[in-house]
Amino acid sequence: MQTVCAVILVFIAAAAFTSADLDAHRPRHDTNLEIYKRLFETKRKDQLNALKNLVELNDINQQYKIIDIMLKGLFKVLEDSRQILVAANMQPNDPFPMDDKIKEAYSHVVENTAFFGDVALRFPRIVHHYYDRNSDWGGLLRWGLNFCNQTGVFTGGAHQHVLTLMSQELGITEKAPDFINPYRTERDDVLHTAEAFQKILREEEKRRRKEEKRKEIRKGPRISRSRSEL
Image (cartoon, rainbow, N blue to C red; front, top):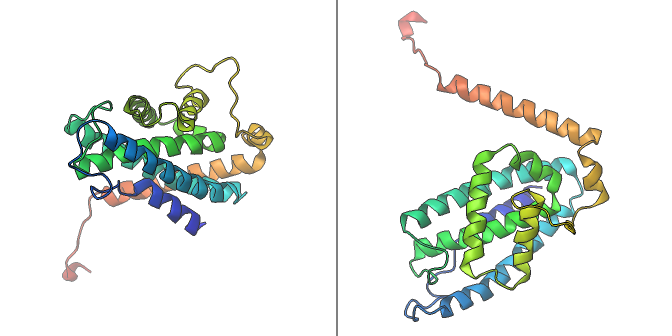
């Protein structure tokens, strides 16, 4: 489990391609974007391979814990990247950025939004459990989708289909009459009523409440006593 989780987190927080990969002296025409799109294809293959390992764990308890950690990390990176892009006034349809910091943020938004789509489609019940109760994530994902759809990175490719399906799966856009999540299995359809899954959810809620209480205690005033008082 630790190996799978570590590999996936590396993909979430991986740095964008450096200026050595994209020549900073190229014209502002989208040659740089086309180069990035080829590199993006390679990154997507690596992401899907990592996700395949998670699927093959075939252990809902392990998968739940990994996805919990993974989503927190993913949305943290997404929020940090949004702040950088907004501060730089970077628009998604601008020429591909050449500044390393902005380029890294741009790549993180594009790659992590796509990767979240993969996770949401393959683990819909688990993702719904987290996503549906977190309005901050909802707003951030909508921003990420809008950004991705205007970059040109996804235009006409299979990855655009991932974004479309994910948007419908999570209720961001209305489901088409013929909508089908191609990765949903019979196991997913019964999982939310399965005793094992409900037990995991109850245990996770208890763990979170305990953790919140511990944090509140640590934040409270601490009274130190001198040695003469002991």
